[in-house]
Length: 352
Image 1 (cartoon, helix red, strand yellow):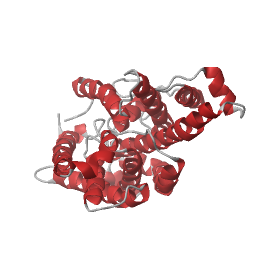
Image 2 (cartoon, rainbow, N blue to C red; image 1 turned 135 degrees about the vertical axis):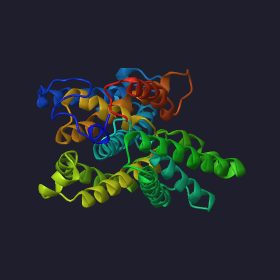
Image 3 (tube, helix red, strand yellow; image 1 turned 90 degrees about the vertical axis):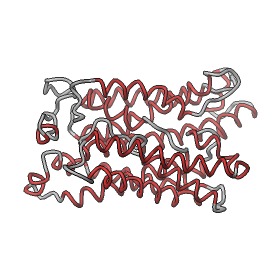
Image 4 (cartoon, rainbow, N blue to C red; image 1 turned 90 degrees about the horizontal axis):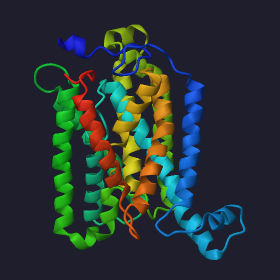
């Protein structure tokens, strides 16, 4: 298959792996995902490691519950749920942006090393004596995410030919391994300093407070607004840089804004919840199966669907081991790894 053929976008509105251009009812899809999000939020509030009767939780939500249930719901489960919604939306948008810009269905903030870059930035800050507050960790995470994104693009572009999906994936996996090894080495050298970050390093939304979310909210908001604003530019760039320029879209500006948006989203999400992988891979692909390749549909739907997946994964993480919790990053990895294998094996996914 020629290089030009491999970089052609799929037909507008067609789901990957299908030959149909049928456009589903977008309002119906949005209503379904919205209902799923409401159900996932309620499930996250009602289900936890410590079993509390549903009637007690319901009483707390309407303001008449007992003190013990009130503390458990409002000081633990509700903040955790809000953080999961925000982090899920950020990672879903970041994955959709990366896949749209690179035209690579295997792209993901974790696979391309962006999560590892943000995690290394946080580890360096902690090793250098930064405080445990999310405020002190945001900028190191943003810097690490930005450097990792740029490094992958540069590595994939070296040598002959442009940055193909396979080259970007290989560069990202290699970079993630190197950055992850550096971060792990620092934690092993000084285990006492990193003891309180053990759960964070595996990816977790447990124990996060509203103040933690408030500290990263501006960066998440900027990233989400940028992601929505880029949808039409990304559609134009998918037709080729020459065509995009003829339509009045600057490929260079689109590239820069995409990198900045991904940096904001992944850096802020990693600062508050640690590196959570595969979410940005699974969700945009599922959205394309539902609504095709139009980014005006895929990116907003990814922002809505990713919190559903993360909330369900976090709920499973609370109950899968009796009386103990598993970091949600481990659950998303167990779900995402088979999805990645399926994508690689799918002959209709363009990876050459």
